[in-house]
Length: 117
Length: 108
Image (tube, rainbow over all chains, first blue to last red; front, side, top):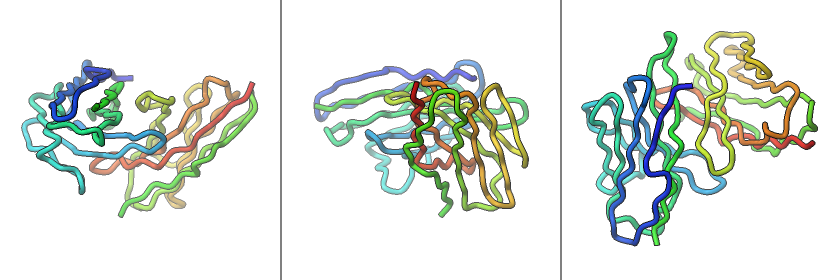
């Protein structure tokens, strides 16, 4: 499958700090990137969708001023969790969608586990 | 509201058996369907995609699609303990719409 990298894989930070997570599609151009969050034993929750060069579209209930998304190129998207608090502790997963074999397929990065103390 | 429904399980099968995972979706015009496997603490991994009615086979995995019944399934033949994971059914829209996942446990 296609490769999507995510960095860092794990971060522990103090309450009130900001955390930046990078997501890169390594072997295809991602027309669209998605950011998901997953709490323990729960399903994936879509936070936002971003297209290269455009503002991200946030799902209902996701604060756009808290979760800043930048999709600077067809291979890079970043999520910044601003002023993180313990309730933001979660598993954040990016996903990139691109065209392969005539169809759009979506691949996931390995995820970033965020712990806010 | 577009929905994807899966039985949460757990589905338990002995090693070597066939595991059958089922999924229904609500949006009749959906065209693209995917199965992802997620191990505990890891991100989802795409294992099958299917776009046309019928069966699609890839190794031990067979995906089946019936658009008239709005039904997608995944069969895993010769199940192995390493297949124990949560299997997510997803339907393509603006973004993928995921079911809650079915937990599969394969006992040796």
